[in-house]
Image 1 (cartoon, rainbow, N blue to C red):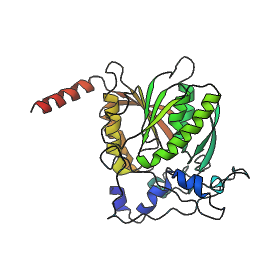
Image 2: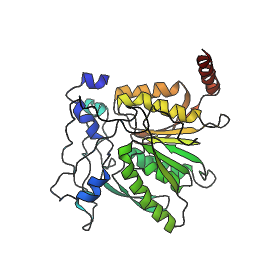
Image 3: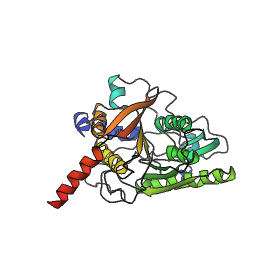
Image 4: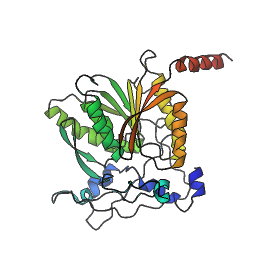
Length: 322
């Protein structure tokens, strides 16, 4: 990216600083001792490859250094495995932190413990792999939005870049029919968390229709459900992922009912100046508004511009005739 080229001394650390993508086998099977560092898997760069599977890593590129040993999570109990007391690195090294524009990215609200316990939609959940502040703020927002009188019941929801699945699972507990999407190597963590929460939902006699499906941003969305709601949290920090992400969001909304197009909710924390590209691309096709703000987290609501679909479809038809 442009930022990486201009900041080569900082770039290797960027992806290791953000959204955890732990491998379930490493978490559940290895259970390292308290003195053993827990390895962090960086956020996958979605939209880089073609097809429905995650793209293979480029072996011609130099490997990025491993993240430093994570900090201890004091909330872990005595009977928990050792990794449950670990967390991702807590020191954010994004462009805005290094320049002094951001001052809150390292406070306690940005908990990145690998094993988190949260209360969601009336259930006490355990999320393996950790969650982000963006996701936790979005959950509270949706709990308030989709309450009695504003029901999500039986609405089709697609989440992009689901990570460990907190937001999508919350929407499932609130009544939505949810499909969580991400790259292939995230599926084991997603499926594990869904299976555990499904058991809790069944015991509490709560409906919980949540499934997973692989999707790489920028690739074909025809196999994904026709959505009524599209959501995503903490997705725009990778420069090369912004354009493919916007392409997937637009494609999902375009396949929804023209008379009642899907609405998008995207939770954002600003880290880099070039993230402005996301907002510019979205504003080409969507009306936007700030739906909620909590400290350094902002949730944007995107609604498709009236008449835009017909113009785009007309261009496509004309191009096909040629």
